[in-house]
Amino acid sequence: MIGYILCLVGLVIILVGMIVLNQHLTNKFRGIFLDDERTPSDVSWIRYDPDIQWTIVRNFAEFKDEIKSHGIPKYMSFDHDLADFDESGREYTGLTCAKYLVDVVQTDDVELPEHIYYHTKNPIGLANIKSYIENYIDYKNRII
Image 1 (cartoon, rainbow, N blue to C red):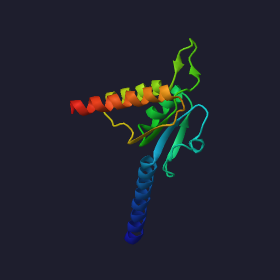
Image 2: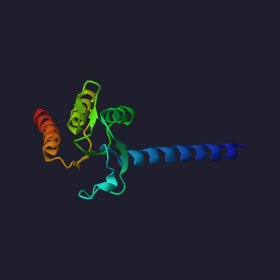
Image 3: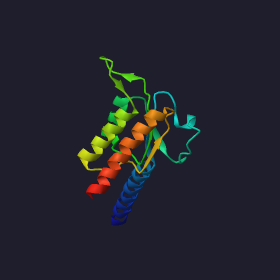
């Protein structure tokens, strides 16, 4: 009887270990792909790691929800023009999402994604998103 119980305990420990490992591997390659139309496979001008498990978000609300629900991922890829407007006509862009990301990082004292890509075809939007994030990184490096 004791052998049977020990065997069951051993199986439970193995199962818990497998679940924890699976969660670790899932988080290790989790990414947010922000774009109102494209998918990661449409972006031929960037070579993404094929192991990234992308969550595709189409607008600012989905971007916020994904971060609130699952935290900051290891990978993130930004489009700028999202065709996302509220009732009053205010536009939400990739820059809006980048600003939200930086706010969450500062407020929650967490790190930015380890890998950030900018796949937008809008050169001004790309410069705005990239410079906003890089300015935050420079600021953080100065105060440390």
